[in-house]
Every structure is written in structure tokens, then in C-alpha cells.
Amino acid sequence: MSPSLSPNLSPNLSPCDQALPYVRAISAYQPGKPITQLAREMGIPVERIVKLASNENPLGMSPKAKIALEAAVSTLERYPDDFELKAAVAAHTGLGRERIVLGNGSNDLLDIAARVFLAPGRSAIFSQHAFAVYPIASLTAGAELIAVPARNFGHDLDAMRAAIRPDTRLIWIANPNNPTGTFLPFPQLESFLRSLPRDVVVVLDEAYNEYLPADVNGDSKDWLGEFQNLVITRTFSKIYGLAGLRVGYAVTSEEIADLMNRVRQPFNCNNLALAAATAALDDHEFIARSYQLNSAGMEQLVAGFRQLGFDFIPSYGNFVTFKAGDAATVNEKLLRQGIIVRPIAGYGMPEWLRVTIGIEADNRRFLQALESARG
Ligand SMILES: Cc1ncc(COP(=O)(O)O)c(C=O)c1O
Image (cartoon, rainbow, N blue to C red):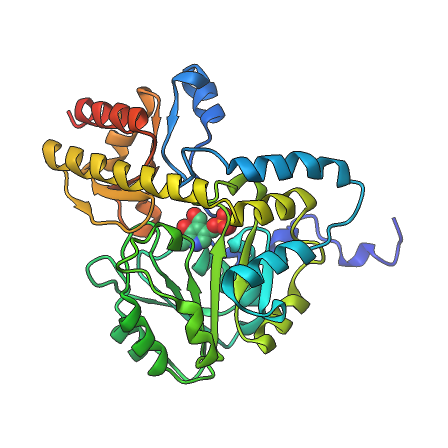
């Protein structure tokens, strides 16, 4: 050890004491319990476990994506080339490639947006019960978080507008929202955007957009012409069934896309993810099948909650949040029966649990387990 360094070393000083205070204030993201973890913890065979905890696609991945993925294995000695996926997203959205940013999952894009626009001395607004990554990304960038109380478990857009301060630079909106499943009608969202100062960026997270019924779905990317402050994020983790590959995209103005691309890690989407996502985007048959399975499963769960007498929040996603009462105990009893759902106490909803819509047999097993768990 160099003698010149020793006077600064104190045996009592932890390097963590030097960590940024706003990083120390972050609560880590709590993922759904993996199947293998429950198997280890409770000795339940993996094949007896039903995981309905992470809003994954119960049909697996798009078959077209699987073929593309297998072919891409032979390219892994090369750094990725994102040309094809950007071309596919450009064709899918009708937007030029210079307005597209690719992410290692859409969480990566949320983090990139925060790093472009947030810093100590700036604030970000999000809704109570909104997706957990918004606080994490905002706090990591050093910004102050303004949490606006929810209205009927969803975003209260009037209150969010009223919460804007001179130092506010970013507003997070999830539509539909996770974990509550609430949905903001497109005309309402459009008026909200129109009412905002144009130097406040809105990140509109549409991770569950593909599950919206046609009669309520709209085309938010049409707003990009009018609102230069809008960033829309989408993911391949949900209806496309590629959660494990980590890939998503953002569409925005050319200027914001350019800034986000400067902050992005080079090669943030790997070869397998790029190939699979490109193929998945075009697999209309798989998307339609996934949508139909979700609608049928939603009806099954809602009927089950009604029959068992559980309150639930009407959902526009691939999950439903229901009032379990003593949610921690109900969750534990479900786990003992091999059913993994998602406790959401961390979202300020300690009496509620969120269940992902699964295949018919798994939904049935969940409802049977819930009936015996309510005790
Ligand atoms: C609202 C919302 N946004 C973003 C994500 C992030 O998804 P991913 O990073 O897998 O694209 C999720 C995942 O659960 C989500 O629920």
C-alpha cells in the first residue's frame, strides 16, 4: 500500500457512507418470486408451481421469435446491429428510425429518460400506486419525487398538472397502469398533454397497450407531431412473450431520441433480443391468440372474484388486483399451495394482491387455492 494513501484511511469509515444520499434512499425493486425459489424454499416440485406474479405471457414466446432466436445464436461472437429491429419498429409505428430508441427492456428506456432530464434540483411527478420503476429512475438521477394521490386507484391528471413546480422536468404516466390496471381514455390524456408546459417531458409508458380492447385503444404516436415533449415506451416483455430477453422501444421527437441515444449504453440490446423482437413484431397470429387468451382469462378471474366475494379493480392489462384483506397471510397460504401472485404492499396497497392472467387451468387452480386460503 502506498504510504501517501494511509493518512486518509480510517478503519471506521465505510465506502457506503460516501454513497449518494439519494441512492441510499431508494427501495430496491421487488420482483415476483421465481418458480425455482419457491421450489427451493418449500420443497414443492417445479411442475406443481403456478407463477402468476410478473405479468408474463402464459403462452410463452411467439413461435416466429423462437425460430429467429435460434438462428441468431450463430451470430453471438459479433456485436449487435440494431438496423433490422429499428426498421421493423419504424414500419410498425410509421415513424422514422431517427425517432426510435431501443432499450434493454422498457425499464432501460425509463432510466435513460430520467438520466437525460432529471438531476438534483429538479423534480419528477408520478401517481400514487404507479409503476415502481418511476421512483427508482427518478431518485437514481437525484431528482425530487412528487407523488400525487391516486383517484380511484388511477392517475389523477388534474392533480398531477396542479403539482407541477418550476423545477419539474418530467411526468410519468402508465397507461394502463401496473399494478392497478387502471386506464386513462385517450381523449383525456390528449387534453392533459395539451394543457402542460412544453418544457416538461411526459413519459407515457404503454407496456400493456396491446391488451387494450379495440374500442378504447387509440394511437398515441399520432400525438408526437404536436407534442415535442412526449416519450412513448413499449415493451416486448408482455404480449410478445419476451420478458427474459429484455427488449423494448421508445418513440419520441428526433431531438429527444438523439439525446436518449447518447446516454444509452452502446449495444444495450443483444443479438438474440434484436432478432426475436424483430420477428415477434410481425407475428400477428400469436398476438391475436395472446389477446384472446387474456380476455377469456380476465372473464374467468373476474367471475371467480365475484363468486368468492373479493373486491377487485377492473383492469385493462394482463393482470387483476384484488382485495385480499390480510394479504400477507393469504399470499403465504397461496404459496404453500404452489401459487405465486404478487404482494403489492410496496405500492401502498398492503391489503391487495395482484394476479397475472394465466392459462385456463392455472387460473382455475389459483381460484381454488384462493378459496381455501381466505380462511
Ligand atoms: C407499467 C410497466 N412499465 C414497464 C415495465 C417494464 O417492462 P420491461 O422492462 O420488461 O420492458 C413493466 C413491467 O412489469 C410495467 O408493468
